[in-house]
Image 1 (cartoon, rainbow, N blue to C red):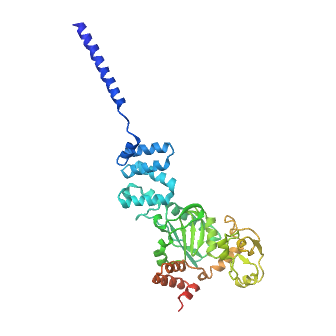
Image 2 (cartoon, rainbow, N blue to C red):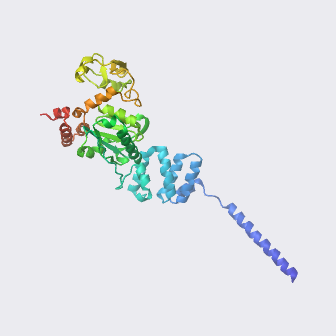
Image 3 (tube, rainbow, N blue to C red):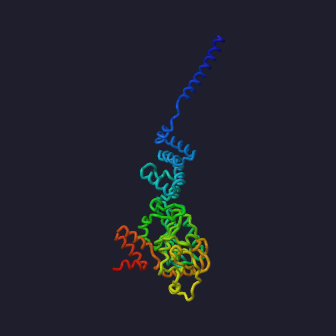
Length: 390
């Protein structure tokens, strides 16, 4: 009986091991899914899509990783959505990411509340919870009012810092210049470019209703990344601008010209006989400059390269380099005095409404042209009044 029991135990143990080895053998014979099968399943299985995304990310196949993160995100994986937004922003920029996200909302692939309010603000997709930034009124009055516009949270924060620094600057705060409350527009409407080394461009037509209804003559758009500029009543800044850059571009609002060599196209426009600037005298125009600025003594003319491309010699009216040569440098007292003088007659500065009248004319929208041109004339801009004259 004892021998029989011992034999049973040995036989049972062998049987157990035999079953285990059979299972191992069976599992080793089952083929793993192919990549094609996994890719097909990733279309509907977020865990597989996320796994493939991590594999591609580890091998630096970034576009492929982004594709699978997006698949997992639209299937409901919130962690994959965070990775998708971060990676897309890294590869294609903030605007492209905002456009993609907005498209998912329209298609119903994602719900708006799947993305945090902070992330939406970071990408410039605003709801009803827009931050409020108050107007800035100069202690010496408002001879000139500028309307600031931003599209991203980063621009909101930067603008708040800029106006605070403006108010603390002894020269800038002494100018009769005011800023209206900041207005926010979705980045997907304004579509400001983000190319380093190139001037920022935006879809300014998106601001048409703001310009039509606003009590201001100049726009400040702080959005995008790239080079700053001032044209047609629009002061364009990147959303990482410094006060020095804002100050330099603001001097362009007042008619000051760069004191370094302009590009061919700019030089051809700027360096024409009969055009007059606060800080520059074109060759042979000294007497006209003295009359315009009511000066009794000739300024200290210093040759600059501004009009080199046009074959015209230009001279600045002071000796030292300044913010119109290198924007980080100081605003000379002579230029500050000229700025104050210009602001006594702000109607001479072209209002942004005049530019929007030009845009309306391009679209052959004559009622809108009439509206904007009349607004520009109401601000006292002589060219607008001439355009409206019968």
